[in-house]
Length: 312
Image (cartoon, rainbow, N blue to C red; front, side, top):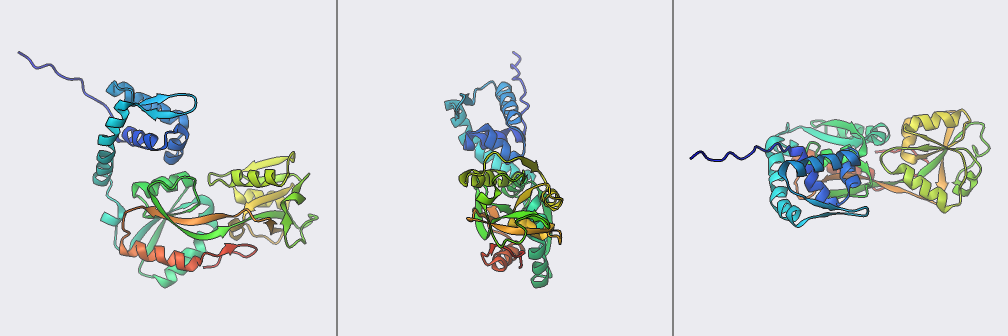
């Protein structure tokens, strides 16, 4: 008698990784942020996975996402398999990389401002090591580090450090960027409240700058002002130079945006965030990567960026 042939399954590693990530976060939005994709793309991929295996893995309500009993049983078996598959199919730099080459991922804004000084001093102190920079949006940086494609990353303190070990480099405050003819141009410090009634130019990036700035503006009663939201720090600075408003930027952006036609003036009270170095938790760095890690930490000395440019 002929044996009944079972239907074949078409399930991708990407779907399984999304399943494990969604089970950890229990949020389509946070899972999407980790992969650099939209909430709807995560939902669609999980739905396709459930349809393919004919199992319901999650209970979805308007308020939460929870694993079903079937999902919990599958997660216990799938999570270690996904880890093993990734280790086999995508050798990590610490396992197969060149001895003197270190892959470092960096959030785009930090690549232009903070990283050059750190890399310059690194080349002087560690001339036998080449640091290959992977310039990406912050969510992609975190994913590169989690996957092992980058041995370490430079980011602004993220909301989620799952699977990552972090070391603070320095605190980074916010500055008002004002043109040469602006009434506040001569000030040594600017209080957030002084921005009331002033057109404001904001940085809308993926590192949480916009949320942090909006929180500070609300805290100090700066409401109702016209806001322009821009994705590039240089665009904010150039528009401030043209007298189109007061820009608000992280102080680290000064290194990339400084100009004789504008000033970066610290905003008070302080509303700083931390720039940090991240790596995979429970994964030892190769000797060359460990040397870069130690040098970055020693060079930063946990300083606070105020009115001065970053120095390493």
